[in-house]
Image (cartoon, rainbow, N blue to C red; front, side, top):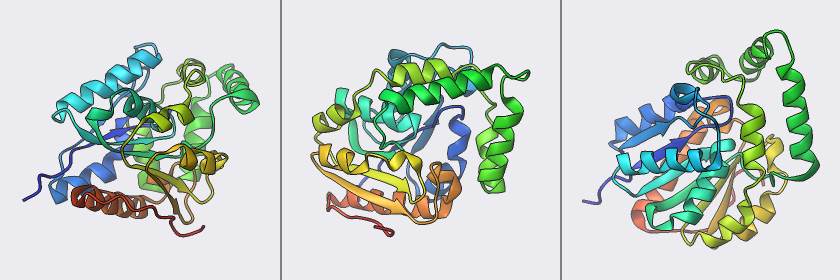
Length: 248
């Protein structure tokens, strides 16, 4: 019998490991070892400064906790660091799933995002009410609850975005030799450069989840979990066939 593939989840910015509750539950039912970690400045590590080195160390600790070789799944911020980790440690990554991470983190879009974050930070509550209201408005009730369950890290945005701006995900994807799945919601604004990301992969495929937004695993948890299940079946079978999901 083929051993079950361990899966490590890496969350997005201003969320935490709790955002993966639905996926952890589903994998637990199918016998796959799975773990969701907190990045520096988030969740249980909220008091730690966010740095590239710190984020990669947190991922490596999770990989080692699962036996040293995993299917690595990251969303948004977590997707960029999953890409970087896979490029640096390909022997530890059976396959890479980068969701909502297909915009190059550089130039005016990154500058505008950082400027907006700084403005929000000046609000009396540092943006807590606004962030909470948007999460509850844009996500299903369970998804919003899972997003907020680990707390809201109010001070991590500028450091997190600044650090991410030093990454070069297209180069990193070109260095990782294993299979890559780029999973995006159909309405995700971070699909901006998805074709360039796909072209950079040595062994890549693009999956589009219908009616899903940027936070695809929270907006459409059943569909995202089904995609993850298919990826795990491909990994177990040793197959890596390019595919494009519905909506393309």
